[in-house]
Length: 64
Image (cartoon, rainbow, N blue to C red; front, side):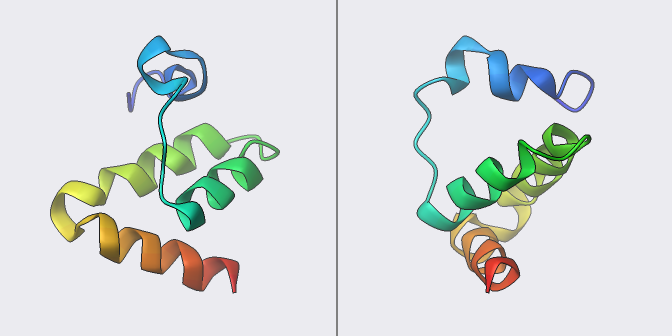
């Protein structure tokens, strides 16, 4: 995914993917940014180490 971040937007496994609310809002906002796919990949890359709860809280903080 890091090499082909567009797969995040276009890939079949991600089409019906339900993210926590704050992460989904961040994903939608990043769609309008040139490197938004890469930024979202970076965010999702934090989940294994920090946990989904911490990543969603960070996304919510960024939105606030």
